[in-house]
Figure 1 (cartoon, each protein chain N blue to C red):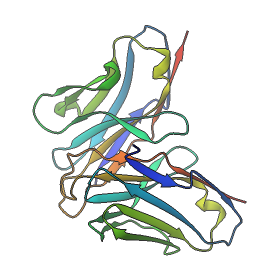
Figure 2: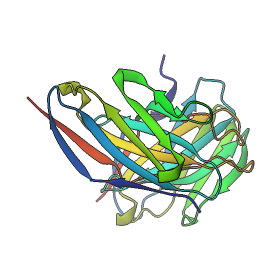
Figure 3: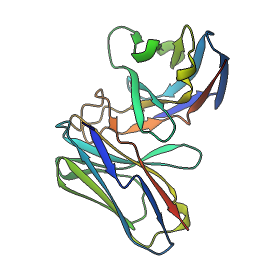
Length: 115
Length: 115
């Protein structure tokens, strides 16, 4: 069974500071990994994904994440936080079974950006 | 044009009632999903359909019955609503059932409140 752990349910940074949101996964097969962002009263929007190939993936809004197999991690970073980045962030893993592709989500990290 | 649309956005009803939530996607995807987000924002898959065929059915009370009249629509009917059903229900869609590397596109959610 797959699982995702997001370390830190709340992260607070100052505007312009580095954003680091941590995600560790557990999977018996090479995983597909995703980061989604949820703004208040909205659905989830894809930030970026890792499937195969380059382990450093770039996404929208200046975010990037690095897949580290040895550490079973997929941490999300952004060099300089903006007020508009305040939202809930979810890391997710997808299975490779042909019978269905379910996303298993972490518990989410609420990012607060202080002026 | 909204890619994945759900109606209604808000649903307030009494315990014991029956209600339905509708979902439509115009992305041409083959697979659709229902997820439940609880009050702690934890997301869990409930069902998945591929081209009108049920392919994922998690441990969900049989008061919940999904129906897919065609691959662009996936509805969720809930009988005998209980207080614990209060949550946000998200519809999502993606390409193909076995292509777990494809991102899922989410609707804005239906906020269900049971009085």
